[in-house]
Image (cartoon, rainbow, N blue to C red; front, side, top):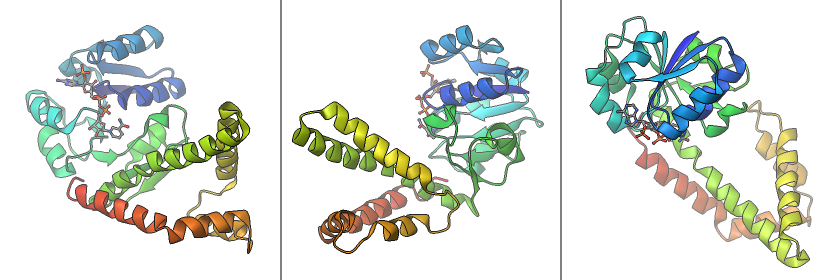
Length: 255
Ligand SMILES: NC(=O)c1ccc[n+]([C@@H]2O[C@H](COP(=O)([O-])OP(=O)(O)OC[C@H]3O[C@@H](n4cnc5c(N)ncnc54)[C@H](OP(=O)(O)O)[C@@H]3O)[C@@H](O)[C@H]2O)c1
């Protein structure tokens, strides 16, 4: 495999590390950008070399487009992509049609949304359109979720924003517990293990499992029921839904 990364920032690095870990024979070429990251990767990964963007394209069959959309608009028209380049875009804020225009004569890119924990696997990868390439490179350890249309990518980007809210809730529970017991350290260990252990038991097969778990936890008069009812009547879920709607609007048309 000869794979090149245009851009070497926060999302390219974990993707590169994932590829290097699972395909040790792959030749990996990376833009000489974000010097601290790209040079560190070069010093740590045997088959990885850094160079200018055109060199990355010339050396590679598979290209991962991992720059900001405005940078892509500025630099791609001056680069010579090949017709037989296979491309994966991870760029938000730019439609596939525009990406196609920018990378011609390369064609048929797919777009996906990796998150930094792709480095260790189990990172859900929504993709449009279907991509055997993405499956081949990342599908062995990351669930690939095929979208029916490009318009569904925006809401997936929006849904990633649930993470900070979840962390704020866990931080709230951990701090509350730590203040009661005097050990913030143990409280964080307890809450983090409670939630990750519980989530690990939930099958990720899309079969209404969140509701199923909520039903299992909702003993009448139980602790979980009391707290959920309290939060629900304070409008927590309605507010969350409204926040997601606002993000969905913001990301409309961004592909
Ligand atoms: N971060 C995430 O979790 C995430 C998740 C999904 C998708 N994305 C998407 O991935 C793309 C990159 O995001 P990021 O978070 O990785 O941003 P980032 O950390 O800012 O990385 C952008 C990279 O582009 C490089 N760059 C800038 N100008 C360049 C040029 N002329 N030629 C080649 N490379 C150039 C930067 O190098 P310098 O540092 O030298 O300027 C940097 O390595 C974005 O489109 C974003 O929407 C990000």
